[in-house]
Image 1 (cartoon, helix red, strand yellow):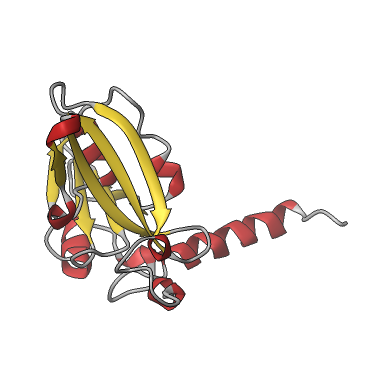
Image 2 (cartoon, rainbow, N blue to C red; image 1 turned 90 degrees about the vertical axis):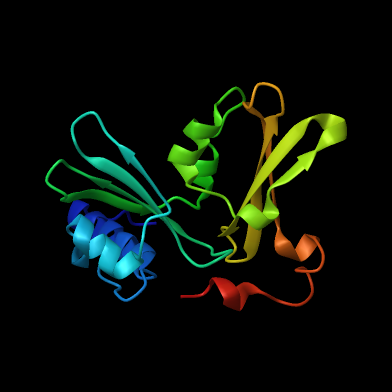
Length: 178
């Protein structure tokens, strides 16, 4: 098998990154979001925002109710976008570790869908749940289970929606297509 030249590798990486951003609402071009004003125009009102020590901000833009994407935007003090990424991914879920606080989870994943927040009294456990498209382009759910007393992560779990009811009936892969 022949390996790619450095130029071909860079071109392939660029194409993959553009394809990943092609699902931005209103624009497939990630370059269209250069400022906080652009982000709000294209993505809507942020659900959460955090001030950063350098004067910039981190903003979470969940898409839809029960949507498959949450765009995390980081800006500098002048409102210029430094980074934009969909945080509903296995790479971001892997960052959630036992002992993390609820605020730390929110800064990585943004807010979960409130209708799926459940408290289990017998286990003294609070569960937050997010919807995402898994690596097989199937709708899936990711759960973070918090200890009720300490409000820190106890564990995480994820599974495709087809394995649970009532969402599991039929093929839902078209829900994850752009």
